[in-house]
Length: 328
Image 1 (cartoon, rainbow, N blue to C red):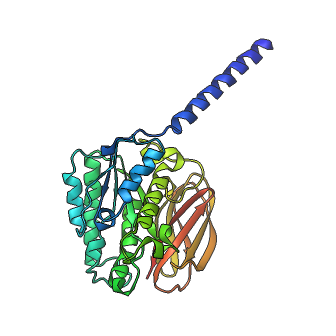
Image 2: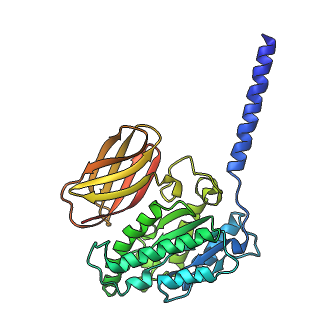
Image 3: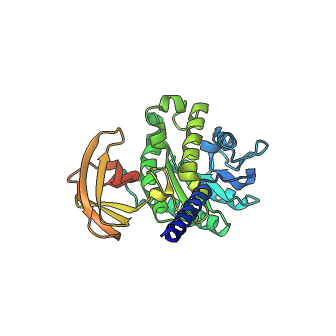
């Protein structure tokens, strides 16, 4: 009896030690060099303090040495094709990228409201996919794609109409991307209620806006023990709506008064869908049951909602997916 107890105690002690070691490994911070992370885009980055603030935050967390800074190649006024070329010309190639693209193109938007098949947006989509494929070929491990905050003021009405469409299309690309590891950060949520502090001309960051934007990026990248930087692992633990690992929702399609969610769950679960307007007013909430585990489609009858872009929140246990959906 004593031998059995002694053996069990040794087994338990070993298991605790292994568990503690695994926790330490999973919680280990990355150690980055300045050249490991690249900021790319147009004036939203080039004319702001976003990249320098990212360097400051990484240093404060002990991830980046005090004498290092992340590299920026963003140039003001360039279309998405040039943003792509800026990455191709970057040397050395980074391990991680924080980027945007399409804002300049959308300033001359001719798409009708909600037209995701518009030629301009489809061209942006193709370039975005080519850009992502080039990052994968170049050895980039993970990247952040930024969803622009809403343009402010009547002067930017055309741009706003285009960005509403592009947000839906770009998010769709991110939802099906697996390599490099994708991370979508929607600045409309970050900037909500603070646009007067975060922009002075309606589209570019003030210093406060750049600082808040960098904080949103860094918070998303360091979520779940820096899972963004953790090669080949997935993020676990409490829900973090900005984390790539919480994209258990593969796609959302609105058709014939229904929203069809393509999602993957580990076990039969209750799925909650909440739709709100961009101003935060709730227009639909319901719960459905995912009857089986694995990839499946769950439909919600949403009725005759007005055409436009809505904020969508899907919950399954501790997992949360926040995105936008276009109702046509």
